[in-house]
Image (cartoon, rainbow, N blue to C red):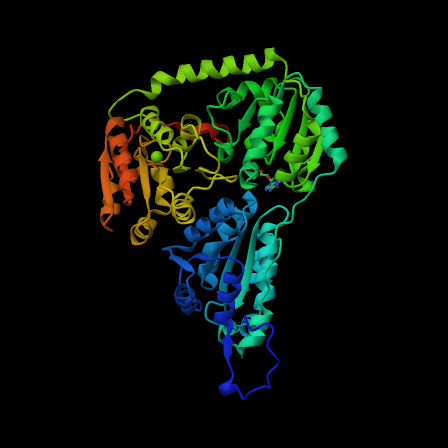
Length: 577
Ligand code: ADP
Ligand code: MG
């Protein structure tokens, strides 16, 4: 503000314009456009939350830090700015760590800011209030971790955290702020000057022209090419370039879960419904912001078939290349720059892939879609997954700008395949780890960051990890409609304990009414027993924008163990019958 004013004589402390650690943290966040905090107040950051709110920052207070952390992580994915999660010391910090690790694993930019106890006491292990060496504990779980001890370093500390979170491969960053820092007082003008506005926090990373040429050569030699779009491609917000590239190349594309909608699932080149076939039969596979991790069977084995394959990979992280199989054409850079460079180098003439391949993909896709169609239209009571998801599929088709949050086992795996997406970054789910419990945090952040209506489709078990946040949804009056697929348990509600009177390990209270939880806080609760009822209730919720929870009664016998990843669930062959 007073940038150019002449240097005043140092005034006595009591007449000086002063600032303190609290104000500097808030000013540093605002200077960098970080205007939303997800957190839980308490010692030593209670006043920070109050003052932040008074200063115009939106502060969302959660009921548990883990959910605030998931909100911050997905806010980072949606906005390309680090999502901020603010917690108290030791237990609050630990509750936030799962989300920090999740953000890092998923390449989402996030900053976990935690208050902490005093260094002098912690380091001598003298038993301070909530004593814990938080910095050391955070380090292996995030991309970078910093601690600020002096008020004049708050500006630099936050700048480093922002850059670490968003530059290169995005990830989670931990920022440790000991309690004593907040009360440290300094001259206001000096404080202002100590703040840093981060310029070009995530600089473009331009691919080498030779790498672009190499990639195009490999693609030109393909007889059965395939593009796989991952959530890195969705994150990059290079939507137009990606669409142009897919359309100009004419190559079928397969969206990973959170890349669905980058191009509509109904696009003529979409191979989503022919997944098994294209993974097996393709000869050249181009990965755009997707990793060859477990979700893609590491690029080898039965899923990928016998015939040799060549991989082209676009990624911002050079070390991602060859992580599982040899990459014939690595293109390192940010996806926007890489895809634009490819488009330029393709020139005006580009031969579409052989028609027998694209026709075969289309035929397989149409066949699978047709096979599924009648199952989605059943109106059975109790509902099965297909009947219930068929209703929700129609709703997203009619409301393509709504955000779909999805977690569970069967509820996740089936919804991913059944519900078509039409716009980028509208599908938010369990990510790389398949975390249960992300739903409420994601739904809240999606509503806050985008202002769009949110439909959260939740398994009953998944919902339970964060169910108390329905109070948060009601308190902030967010346009969130939660649908709990209630099949009385984990995977199924039919297991029986034959050895005693306790319930089986995978079952919950039969006939539970999750809708009553929403009513307890002033939201709308609905019990839906048919797909028609479900559809009516969701439409009403989406029209009104009122916080709503629909208890969707699903046949307890409808699910399968571990959903579609039963192969990862070891089972004893020695089990007593
Ligand atoms: P999915 O699970 O959808 O396949 P992954 O999380 O496995 O996606 O992969 C995302 C990839 O995208 C990561 O390897 C990450 O480095 C990369 N990535 C993220 N943002 C960008 C970007 N802006 N430019 C290029 N690559 C990116
Ligand atoms: Mg269940």
